[in-house]
Image (tube, rainbow, N blue to C red; front, side, top):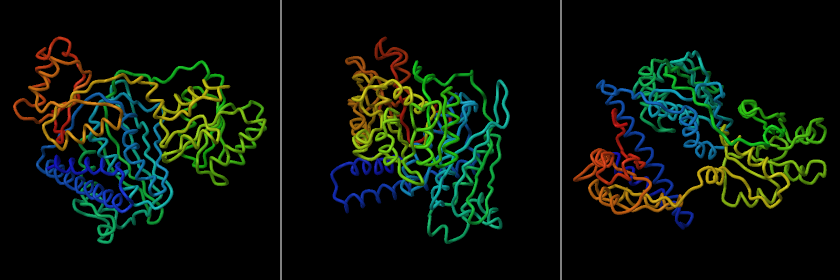
Length: 470
């Protein structure tokens, strides 16, 4: 039942990127949003059915917590931006990131809570926060919070929240939709993670949904980022009105050992930049400041002889077409979209530090940073997929990312194509006729496609994600 819905959503997504007139674009966006809403309902009902039947069990695998949290914030950043909300990810560097557990189900709970927070918040911010409650060499208990500045929940109605098919009141159902299953499913998943879930809220004063979960701790892996000889010689001014965002950026710079200061307004920033005994070399500027926007502040900095050589990094909630040219013309060396990510920010500062004195340097963005980090090669991709709609969605999506792919309609054909041509990656559908993805992958690993392909990267694609699939 998920497969046709994924086809509808995927093809609509591609349609939105074509040359539509405004009315057609609005219709296509509505179709996509309705399809996503229906898919959410389908997933909720299927998950709830498995839970009620006692058939839902968690995986235990190694995963990176920071990457999981960043994927949640990336997924929901656009939705928050459309409502003018700041979406903040607050994970201090001392929280263990290399852990064992079920990342898919953790992500599901976080997406559900964050989605709800965005849905019920008209102005302000939504913060995803994680802290360590306790930890030793083999396990860690973590506390997750999703904090919003929304409408809040009256205390006399909070007992309904975790009941199946229940919402605060009928008006909520009519206005915001949904099945009323999301929090019930989240509660059951958290219980399976040996944790608890709850809420702190008053009507009109926002809400904090929290849950605890128990994880295993993997071998300690350090966070790797660009090593730069320039970092220790830099001094960074953080210009950010939001105190939580300031704290997040401060934690990151402290972790990297980068000297820094903070300013909560443009005027305060200008004062510090011109009077500080230890001169700042880089300024990280939020686009939305209380007294002037980030572009106006950049123009002031670049027009003053005393500060014109300071390199500028812009933080913005959304990147729009044409931004790169506009930002570079204003004097920015780089711009990043929120939420702020540890590795991306440090790598950006390192890259900006390396451009000192180079006026012709291209604007640094998270996109060309990723390209510089991966040095994308001419990668040949084999797509093993029998569904024609899924083939089209995958091929067009890969084309948009700058890749090309060839199609095999089942596992047998995929093996033959691997024998006769060089590929670097296989995208393997799990369910196919004649030979499914499991059989094909086993055969490839056993040398059926040649010794050269025994260790080729194979990425599984499935609509089910059942226990044991990993």
